[in-house]
Amino acid sequence: MMISTLLRNASVAVLLAGAVGAGAHAHQAGGQQQQQQPFNQQQQPEIEPVSDSEVDAFVVAVDEASEVFEEYRPQLQAATDEEATRDIQVELQEAMTVAVTDAGLEPQRYNEIMAAARANPDLAQRISSAAEENERNGE
Image (tube, rainbow, N blue to C red; front, side):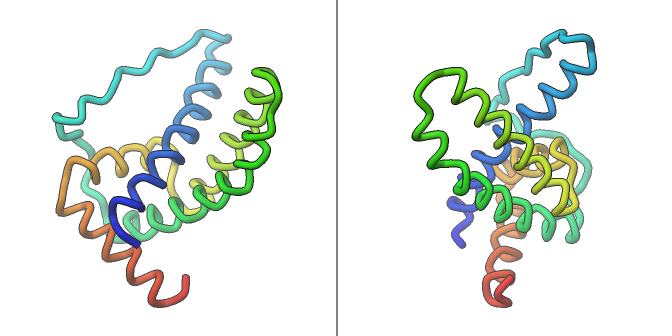
């Protein structure tokens, strides 16, 4: 899998998984909405170093979250109004969060790794190599 495809798939999943995390946090905070700062793509995010096991988990999470998205795509396309679309998006976000978590990452860490991979060519290459290895092994 090309790194650009991997990161594009990760972007879809990260947006949805991140929204669930923010939504759950806002719900726990008594309904107060959290505003997220836009990510400045020119600035490299500062995160904890990404271990090899996290890279492997990230690759699995991207694959799983992408599969979940593809399962929900027809429902999203067929939605006839905003309420139906929102309901499907909430379901999708929850399913993607489960997929990311089941792969061994918390949504926040997944988001951090994805952002860092976009800004750090070395990390992007590690992720690409792990994805290629997974494909060769049929995982």
